[in-house]
Amino acid sequence: MSLNDLSSKATVFIDTVLSKKPGIAAFDCDGTLWSGDSGMAFFYWEIEQGLISREVADWALERYDLYKAGTVDELAICGEMVQIHRGVNLGRIREGAKQFFAEHVEKNIFAEMKELTRRLAEQGCELWAVSSTNSWVVEVGAEKFGIPAERVLAATVEIDGDCASDRLLRVPTDELKATAIREVIGRPVDAVFGNSLHDLHMLEIARDAYAVNPNPDFAPEAERRGWNVYWPDVVRR
Image (cartoon, rainbow, N blue to C red; front, top):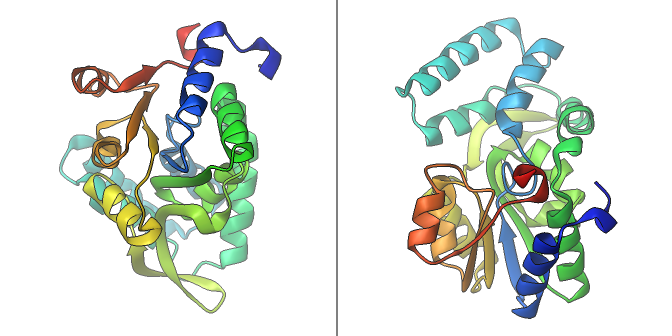
C-alpha cells in the first residue's frame, strides 16, 4: 500500500494524533507498528537457520510449548528468548535479524503508522519503541519508523566482548514497560500506542492512549477506558 492509498479513516487518525502535538511518543511494535509476532517468528526462524545450537534449540522449543500451554509466563519466556543467544556472535545475530525482518516482517508494516511516525518526527516529536521482543529485531524494525537504536527499549542482555551473554538487562512487558519508560525516558510521555493487555500499564501513564489493532481481549478494555481505538486499513479490509 502506498501512502496515497491511505483511507480517510487513516488520515483522520493521523491528523488527530498530530493535532495533540505530542512531545514524546512511545510505540509497542508487534501488532502495533506491524502485524504478527516478530519475536515468536524470529525464534522459529533462527532455529531453522541454525543460529543457535541444536541442544539449546531443543530446550527452548520445549519451553515455548510450555508457554503456549500456560505453564511458563510472559516475562520468563521473553527473557529466555534472548538468553538462548549466550555465546553467539553479536554480528551474526544482527545480520540474522536484518535478513529475517526484510524477508518476513517488513511487508507487514502498517503504512499509516509509518506515515504517522514520519510526520510526528517532522513535528519535533521524540519517538521511542517499547517491546518485549528481542532488541536485535526491534532495532531493525524501529529504524524503518525513524526510531534510532538508542531509543529502543526491548528485551536485551549484556554483551561479553563480541558475543551475547545470558545476563538480562531489561525485559519490557506488562508493568515493566511502564517501568522502562520511567527509568530510561524519565519524562512524561504524551502519546502511547499499543495493541495488547501487555501494553496496558504503559498506556495508563500516557496523556493520550491509542489502542492500535487491539487484540480481542484488549479492545473491550480500551473502549471501556475511553481510549482512542484505531484499526489499520489492511485489518479493516
